[in-house]
Length: 369
Image (cartoon, rainbow, N blue to C red; front, side, top):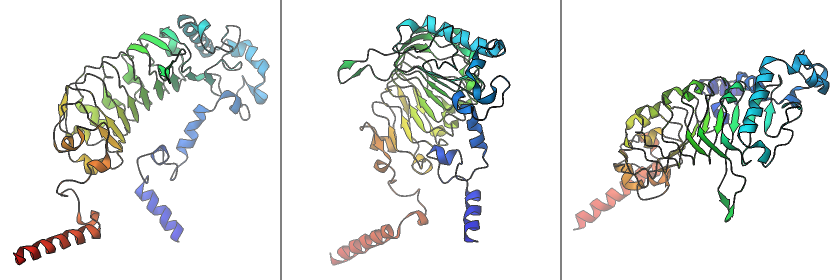
């Protein structure tokens, strides 16, 4: 009976916290939907043990990769053509690693470097970080309709004063990825990208992580309120000149916001309060950014690790504590100046006892005088 009570209480309570993917995906109290949904990420070699597809029976026989019924299927042909165009336009012959990228081989069965395919033989991941990928991305990238993750990032420009000669240099405007209906992660940091796809909001229903730090971006994505699943937004070290959007607070699943070292203007308002799963909020080094960090976040942002507002024009009580430090950790501002935000049940007994003792001592000393 005790165990049943605990389970029922958990069901009523929902996730125990909002700070991590385990609680957020409700793996502890789950109907199995999250697990079933992960099948889309199973690679082709792993799926060979259970697939019943006509094109790949009997444990995925390699010979099937050369059957016309497999090779000539429209989507597979489109994806292979898109990958080869990407290879040719972005200097594939000079990549650090380009194993098996060959028109005569199959991207999935022959394990092209950086390419992961699902059980149906469609590309789900393209991961070529620090691989000397250089040039403009082709418009045909959108043909990878099963793509879940795109990683064309560069890590750092140098390591211990040794230049990183493998950096990617993707440039120009990113093409539309609107037909990539399952896209969850975009990681293109450390490139020369001028603009994200104009219609990126069409990926908002699935996108969970958008990282494009250290590029040449001048604008934030439009229609931010549509990105309801987004938990990571990293657009720091760009040239973004937009006003801080009022709709930012509608990103209620956001955890990590990195917008430092840009040219943001406008004001932060209390519209940011609903972002109650936030862990990092960094808008430092945007001198034109003003407004007030509302004191209500002291209570509502229960899982925040730190704020960063150094070198901004932000004012208010929290600013008075945080404006002169690179990282203002929660403990540096979460005790309100007069505790008016706290209920009696929130204040430990020792606090009340200490205040009472101090008042008693003060009255005693006053009476002595």
